[in-house]
Amino acid sequence: MKYKHLNVRPKALEALKHYNLPKGPLGFGKYSTPIMIVCDYADGKWGELKLAPFAFLNLLPTAKVFHYAQEVFEGMKAYMVDGKGPYLFRPDKNFERFNLSCKRMAIPEIPREYFMEAIQAITAYSAEFIPQNTGESLYLRPFTIATEESLGIRPSEKYKFVVVACPSDAYFTKGTVPVMIERQAARAGMGGTGNAKTGGNYAASLISAIEAKERGYLMTLWLDSLEKRYVEELSGMNFFCIINGELWTPALTETILVGITRDSIIHLAKDMGLKVHEERIDITELITSIKNNECTEAFACGTAAIISPIECLGENHGTRYTFRDQGGNISLKLRQRLLDIQEGRYQAPEGWLVKVDLPQI
Ligand SMILES: *Cc1c(COP(=O)(O)O)cnc(C)c1O
Image (cartoon, rainbow, N blue to C red; front, side, top):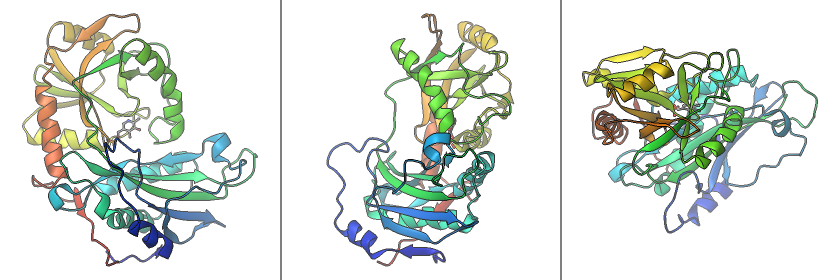
């Protein structure tokens, strides 16, 4: 692509020349390529898009983001398996969701061209550091933070849009994941920010993550805040289960994050001939159907892990309801199909894979 707004700083090219990936496991989101995209908003408009060396952000302690959490982010991946690509997976969806989150958090939207150029450029300039084994990828993290230096409680008049890129291993949870049903706390309420991708939702979920860990679980399953009756999602992933061979996931509400993996799985499942239900799922009925062996498997899904099969749902006092099918039969079939599409081995639906052109450095 021709970059219209990008200003490539010579120091960024210099940093790229001298960079080597660390030896040993990359982990997930642990290391960044030596560059980042930065764009400042002031006086009612976005400035130029800079490709700069990866470095500290220069913020005063009074920057609003530190006090009032006015921020949004996205998570997406670029794939370059066996030298094919790099490909971005459904970046339009991330762009749309980014601006929906911005709207909710009173942050100025970023123009489409800026967002697309930013993610394309950081991917293109990071290309030689994209790991190439199946499951590995370059994890992209675009975010916007409120930077105005003032403690007054009102929307900031200054912002920073930043994108960093993290070469990452396959994020594959070993085996299946035990999940704790959260009966007390809530992640999101009606009219709140549950369907915006904003840090505060995660902050609010961490206390439950601690309890889950203490009780021997790895993730939290959130219920609706009003009746504590209907399944919503996990802290950073959407929820699916298989009942009588059919795929079920909670219908979207304003307290559930609109997952792009969720949407893709629904599409692929229908393609593979599975019947899909997007409906309310009552936790008591779900537990009964696990006990009856009608609900045989469940999984969590999101960009990072794609699909993590769930071992059991359980109460914090200890009772566990274990899924019969621990092989994650259908879960793993869906995971493989999605990965085959993302890595360019299986024909992607129209518009799902976007090729990134490499820069002439
Ligand atoms: C990001 C996120 C997801 C998953 O969305 P994907 O687009 O599939 O990565 C699910 N739930 C929450 C709360 C999230 O923040």
